[in-house]
Amino acid sequence: QVQLVESGGGLVQPGGSLRLSCAASGFTIGIYPMTWYRQAPGKEREFVATIATSVGSTNYADSVKGGFTISRDNAKNTVFLQMNSLKSEDTAVYSCNAKGVGWNSGTEYWGKGTLVTVSS
Image 1 (cartoon, helix red, strand yellow):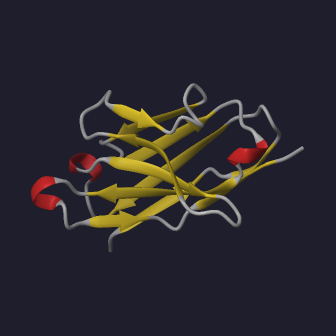
Image 2: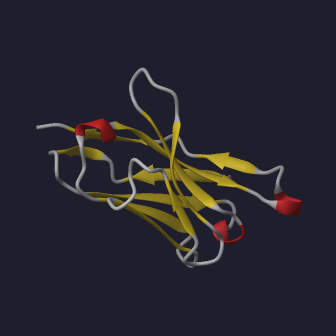
């Protein structure tokens, strides 16, 4: 069964850190660019960060640049999002996405998300 399962969310104080994980099963993430999105209460889903299949190629939303770091461990079939200097506006459900490219462009998987709450 194909799955993406996020973990690591929770309640954290402003200025704190969290590390989210997205573990894949039923498929290999190695050929997929992997992306984190988030959806805050009452708002639309927005892009957070993406990492290409090749290590080192990343892109971030302006709102998280300098504070968040996306990484991947293809051997563990897992993607991570290290979030530092968290702010209240980072409160959201964070979901990971795998979307194929090229010959694989018709394939896309989503996780159900993990809730991050930044509050004092």
